[in-house]
Amino acid sequence: MRGYRDGIHPLEVKDERRAVEVSHIVNVAHAKAIAEYRQLVQEGDILEGKIGIAPYPVTWLSNQ
Image 1 (cartoon, one colour):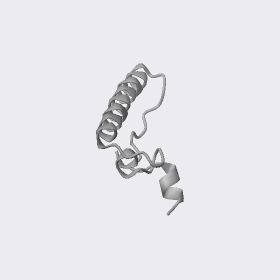
Image 2 (cartoon, rainbow, N blue to C red):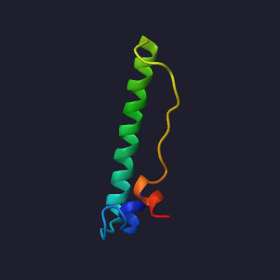
Image 3 (tube, rainbow, N blue to C red):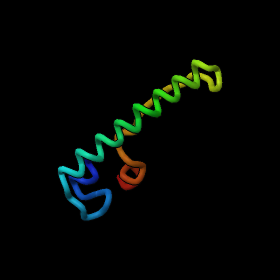
């Protein structure tokens, strides 16, 4: 949400409504990925590990 709200990602685009939409899309995608991951673990196709979501884009961290 920070990117569109503050005009960081994409540059110079500040749109609060779009920020909320993007945040929703990211959360839905993350939930789908978790469901798929858990299914693969349950089937024994992959080993269990940790699931997370990055709080900031890598480019933001590298500019600090």
